[in-house]
Length: 168
Image (cartoon, rainbow, N blue to C red; front, side):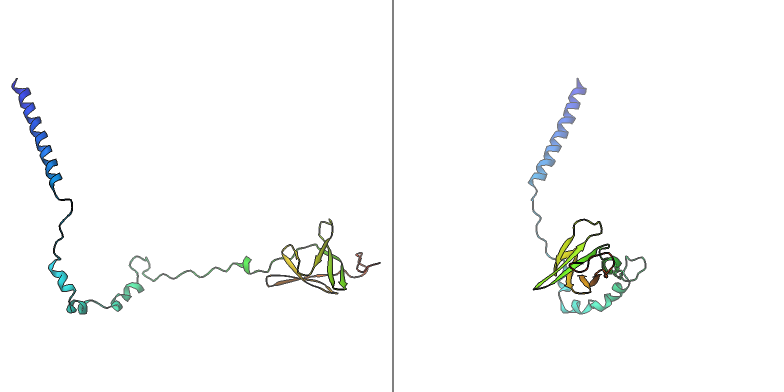
């Protein structure tokens, strides 16, 4: 009978100690009191401490030899890669044939046949053909521009099997 009573007494003591520790934690202040600044803080604000601080020039060696760079050399950005496709002039459309031109009476038109031989295309100056802008319709042919590139589409010479003038 003594053993169960002793066990109960120990359990009661542990529960009371746990409750006391919880009560002590709850009674502690929730904010910390502000402490006075340490004594060396007053010295840091004085004129003598400012004069004793190293100048920014003393740190320039760190910039010239970075600590975390494996070579201890400053970072240099890589050279800009030249995109050859962006600087190369665009390729003109291939296989187009000038069937004829109409110039006169304020009208300037060109009739062009695409490479697949489908229906002809009627173009005026300023219109586009596959991204190329028709800038001039002249007796020698058509001049197209795209960005800084130009493309000349010449009229077929007489007798080449293409009609070059009306009525022939």
